[in-house]
Length: 287
Image 1 (spheres, rainbow, N blue to C red):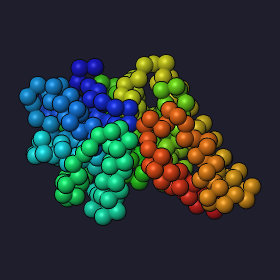
Image 2: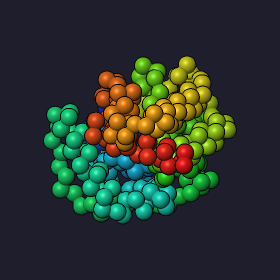
Image 3: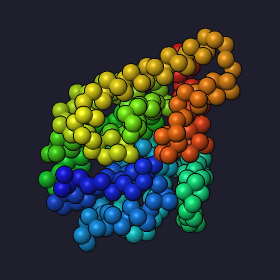
């Protein structure tokens, strides 16, 4: 697809480029340790044109960690996020977590990264909400707010390409076809977001960390995503019924979901932080 180009350089990173007639946009800029190679792929694809936007699907380190280096390469680029996403990036804790987990990921891959950047580079320049449209020139990015993974999670529908670009709210499909449930803030919101995405008149589906997937992967994706979320919720509630402590729940969750394949996408430190969030929101919503 000439106007939607994958610039993903590592399975734990992100970056898909939209090339419109008048403007260009990268949907997530990926891991900090991948910044140099990702930037080169973007430059090669742009052929001398500037990068105008980076759209944030959400504000996690594996999706926007490379931002300081992109801002250095293209000082005039503007980031696009929701009001919730912009608010997150103004806080010290998320900025610290981005730095710390980026360092862990880099060390796990044997790469040294420069973290002397100013935290102020992590901010939202353009604030969007559900239904907004961003004109790129013969390409339109329609915003769908789809909370569940985070409160600021958004998907993008490109009607001219019949392309739906998902975030991690429905879950993450692994290369072996297994589904990893991605909800961290609300199971209920994730279920509602899946139903919302089903209604989009897409022909092509772009999945987190994979890019556009073939029909045999796209077919039935939302059914698999829903089943994975419900199974995760029921697994957590069964642990609660069995009287497991919080620590025991986390250990059991790790045994259930932290597979060898998932470990190539996500350091254990990040996985455990997400596990705690998933367990907490499930128990909270169960009352």
